[in-house]
Length: 142
Ligand code: RB5
Image 1 (spheres, rainbow, N blue to C red):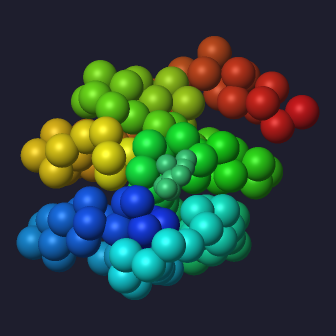
Image 2 (image 1 turned 120 degrees about the horizontal axis):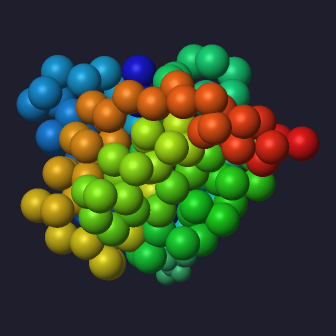
């Protein structure tokens, strides 16, 4: 189960991502926002990351205008490794090396075509399980 959320700046791209997940038969839960009225990205970062830390969802996708604010907010939560990605190389590397559990996107930065490829790459790439990467991830939480 994927938890997804956005503020107004990410709303339009979130709708594209949702359509894409539905087409692929990937289960998701949308934690808002539900229209383009101005709202506060930390609210949605908190809702989505809570689902992950409580074990209800395995990964999350968070979208704001730049992807920056919502990734800063998400990374305040212990156990969350949120990666702002603007290309597929980073999406693949952050899964392999960082075991990132949240993908952040900028709705005003990347077009839908690229964003959906980034989503696929993020969701399809497993963590490497390499000892050095596990060690570094553990160091983040200390
Ligand atoms: C909203 O205008 C914008 O500030 C927000 O979506 C995001 O880009 C913040 O980092």
